[in-house]
Length: 119
Image (cartoon, rainbow, N blue to C red; front, side, top):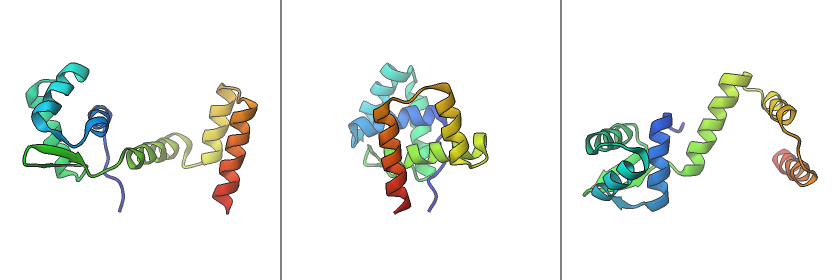
């Protein structure tokens, strides 16, 4: 099953949720006001929208995620690679490495990841 789309502002909300879940919706309203400047109505609207898409669950005024941080990050990266680089991982890595030099440790870590992915 594909990870539901999480838009940028929703992702910032999810980061707060992942850091403190399970969390009562009233506490989430306070956290979103402090960290995002959102009103109570905005927070509840986002909870409802994400619940409808299967990203979070709100039950008995307690909100929990149904999509993990890792799943959301993977989906965002997949979308970036697809939209910007036509789905080409080598094009993505080439663009990144042209912009920033890799240390020997980073290059070794990338080699190891590639080797493990090939197995």
